[in-house]
Length: 553
Image: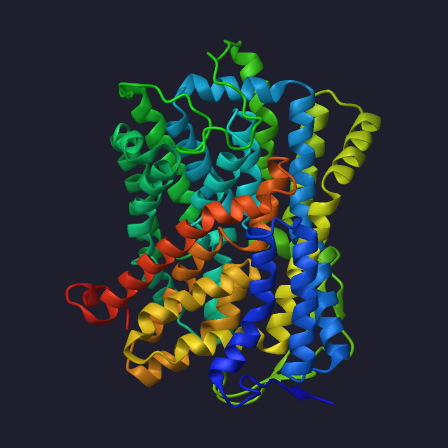
C-alpha cells in the first residue's frame, strides 16, 4: 500500500516544524553541548527520528526501518569506503617516513602555516572536491595538515571551512547536473547562475579561512597571497561555469590557483613567518600538535618518492571521476537492489511537487566505480611503490579498519538518520517553513539549501530534495527559477562544514576521535555566518540593481 507523505500532520506548521526538527536538535545537542560520543549521538538522533516519523507523521514503522537501513548501507558505501581507504594510504605514508618528507617539502615552499593552509586546505582540497567530492577533500587535506603538525582542531575545522566554495561543482559537476536533470532546469543556465554567485565567496573564503586561523592581524600580514589565491580561483570558476559547463570548474580553478600561489611565493614572502599550529585563541587546542621546527632538507629523489603516493592518488581519483570511466566500470558490475516495501511505496505530494510522485528506493552497489575503490587502488599501488609487500599491506589494512571502526558506525547512523528524514518528509516540513517567507524568500530559500546539506551531507542530495520546491516557490513569487535553483546549491555549500558525516571524516582523518562536538562548536558560527552572507547576496541579485543584471532568466 502506497503511503503519502504528510507535511503538516497537526494542522499547525509551527508545531509540525518543531517536531520535524527534534531529531536534528537531539543529535546536535548531544554532540555540541553534552559531549556525547558521535556514534551515540547519531544513534539518539536516529531513534528520535523513528519515533517522530512513525507516531507524529504517520509513516509505517516497517518503511521507517527500511529507510534507515538504506541510509546505513549508503553510509558504508560510498562515504565510509572513502574514509577507510584514505586513512589506509595515510597510515602507509606515515609508517615508512615519507609523510615527514612530504611535510618538509611543503615547508620548503613556505614555512608559514597560513600559506600552507591556502595551498593545501583551499587549493589542493578544491582539486579533490572537483575530482571526487563526497568527503574526499576533507579526508585528504585534514590528514596532510595533521601530518604537517597542525593541531587536530585546526586541521579538522579549517579543512571543513576551506571545503565550501568548490562544493557546488564537486565530483565533476554532479550536484548541478543532478539539479538540472531531476527538476528540469536548463543545465547551462543554472550552471552560469551558480558561477555568478560563488566566485565572490571563492574570493572571500580564503580571507575567512586565514582570519579563522590567525586572526585579523595575522590575515592582513599575508593578504597579497590570499588575494592571489582567491582571485586565481574565482576568475576561472566564473569563466568555466559561464562559458564551458559544470564538469571541470573546480579542477581547472584549483590547478590555476595552486600554480599562481606557488609562483607568487617565489617572488614574495611575508615579513613575519607564522609558525603556530593552533587556532588563534586556541593555542592549546588538541593537546598533541607538533611543535614547529625548521624543515629538514631532502634530495630531489626522496621528495619525489614522498609525493609519489599522493600524485598516484590524484591521477587515479581524477580518472575514477570521469563519467566515461564510471560507465565502463558500472557496465562490468553494478547490481541494483530495490528495497522491497519501500521502493515506489512513498509519494511526495503538493506543494512540494505539482502531482503525486513516487519515491524510488534502490541501492546501487557501485563498488567498482566508487571513489573509495579508486583510492584503494591508489593506496595499493602507492604501497607497492613504497616497497611494502602484500602481507604488510593486508596487515596495515586490518589495523586501519580497527582504527576507524567507530567512525564507520557513526557515518552509517548519520546517513540512516538523513535518509529516514527524507523518506518520512521531515526534512520537507522544515523546508516548507523556509518557503513560507514571502518577499524574504531569496534569503531563506538560500538557507533551505544550507539546511539540506547540513541534514544530508551532500549538495547533490540537497538539490534533489529542495530543487523542485525552489522552482515552484520562485514561479509563485515572480523570481527567476534559475536564481533560486542556484541559490539552493550555493547556500548548500556552507552547510557542508557542519554536516555530521563531514565532521566525522575530519575527526577520523586527524585521528582525533570522540571530539566531533568540539569540531562542530568551532565551525558552526562560520557555517551560519557564511550561509547568511550567501542569502544576502542572493537577495541583492533578486531585488537590487545592478546585482539584478547578473540573474540568468
